[in-house]
Amino acid sequence: MVSWSHTVADRLVSLVVPVFNESEVLGAFYDRATRALAALDGMTYEIVFIDDGSSDDSYAQLAAFAAGNPRIRVLKLSRNFGHQIAISAGIDYAKGDCVVILDADLQDPPETVAAMVEQWRQGFDVVYGVRSDRAGETPVKLVTATLFYRLLGRLTNIYIPANVGDFRLLSRRVADQLKLLREKDRFVRGLVSWVGFKQTSITYKRDPRYAGTTKYSFRKMLKLSFDGITSFSTMPLKLATWTGYASAILAVLYLVSVLVQKLLGHTVDGWATIMVAMLFLGSVQLICLGILGEYIGRLFNEVKPRPMYIIEEDLSSGSGTSQTTQ
Image 1 (tube, helix red, strand yellow):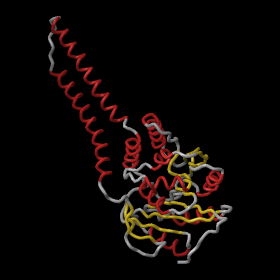
Image 2 (tube, one colour; image 1 turned 45 degrees about the vertical axis):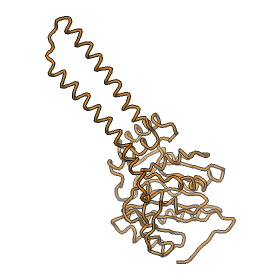
Image 3 (cartoon, helix red, strand yellow; image 1 turned 180 degrees about the horizontal axis):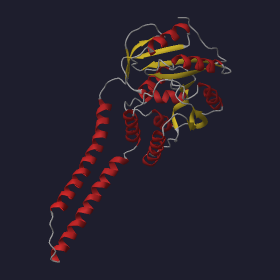
Image 4 (cartoon, helix red, strand yellow; image 1 turned 120 degrees about the vertical axis):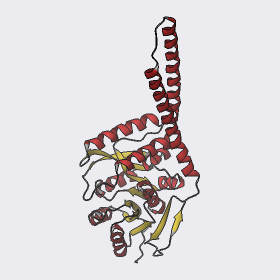
């Protein structure tokens, strides 16, 4: 593979692109992304593709890109570790003065990177894209996304903007700080907000998916939501405690009601009332145990000394050997 380097005058922008079964769109993405990056004034580029255990021919296409372009690096993960982990792997290996996270489905246009780079040149460390229009997305997804960000804003003490995905630019120092955060249940956009530094936004129109279908199922979206809430807030634990207190108060009030009825000589059948009370209290207990289980499960996941991901092959080095990154 032909080597390349950038001059002192040039700044390097790294494009981090997670890929999972995107064979139908990769060719179009590659053409648009390379054109957009090549047009950046005073900048050179690298594209770090992360194949997240694809089962189609995505990896073969990525290998062809790398063979024909020395600015392409392909990291093949040993299995599907998930979108957020794939992004993190790309950030770990990106060498740029700034790093841009961009999915391969062309919903977020590569041409928008130029506007992000301009904001970075003006001194901003994080430039995230705010979607002014989300074409091609169902009303259910739009409503649930809005509700999620409102809930997240109320439960956490950090600002995570709404209508923003993982499409964003990171300065070198922000990328270096993210490399130090090795938690495994990751919510990258939350981590970027948490590290702070000077942040701004640009507005863009999100396009429909170029081809194929979304790889984010409802189950994966739900998991991402749980990861976002539990990673940055202990409020669910407090809610469980408050629910327990509320249930105890209701039980005392009902006890008072039963005693008053007994003193007044009213007969109480009792069966239906007892069953409702037992079901209510049992449900509260199970909900509280479930919340505790979520946090305990995350603690269990964090204390295991396993790497965040395993790289099966790094095409830029040509080694083809397995590597691990903690």
